[in-house]
Image 1 (cartoon, one colour):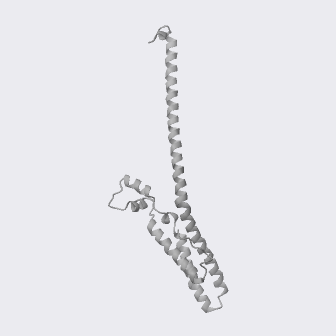
Image 2: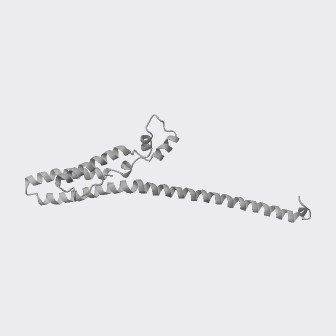
Image 3: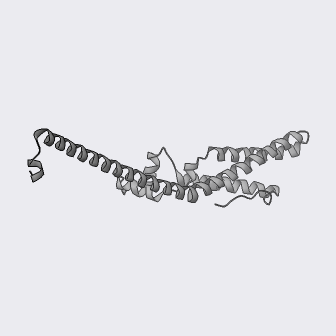
Length: 186
């Protein structure tokens, strides 16, 4: 008890104790709230940076390539469909168009079935994170991560995309349309 407390009566001591407890409680509350807000802001900033990086380095290039291939295949499918209906009278032309139409239908269907997650490159940080959480070194961490994310097979998807892209390019070249439709490499 200090000198000031010695001259206070019991009611004043109770009020001072209550005020001190309230002050300490408010100080703790605002300190904790400030800490939580700081953590949240920090997480959001890093999350946004990660999203921006992934979007610009992976999302846009892969999405653009897949979209260009799908658009080119769809345009070619429409072209062949119209040509076939116009050339129905000429059996030789109709037979060749029918074969080309089946090929472009197959390419278009294959491109439609490919999902972005199947062709996007693997996330090395996600694989490292998966390893930290109990994935054996004996098995490929990327494959186990793919299983955990719903069967994503990035390498298979990239191979399939390359095959479809090459088939579309070969068909365009055969038809003399390779200059008209530019197929992106990557």
